[in-house]
Picture (cartoon, rainbow, N blue to C red):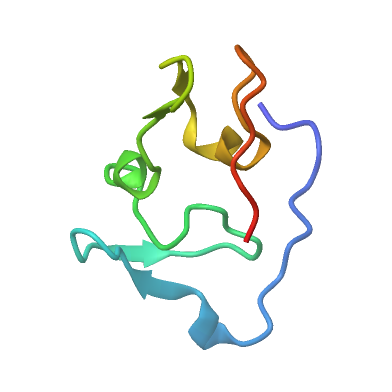
Length: 79
């Protein structure tokens, strides 16, 4: 049970509806929606798979690739 009111609002009414980028289902969007255009069934498809560290082989989650490997302290080379 929510103990607070949802105070988010839409700028215009046409911002409320979209389609899933993966399966095409109709979506009802909320302001500040963080699903990246996917429905809950396809949400796992929008997240990149973990990648192995080039030095030690430990799996690095996609969201942590920019910070490097926490196991061996490998850091991705900059541009």
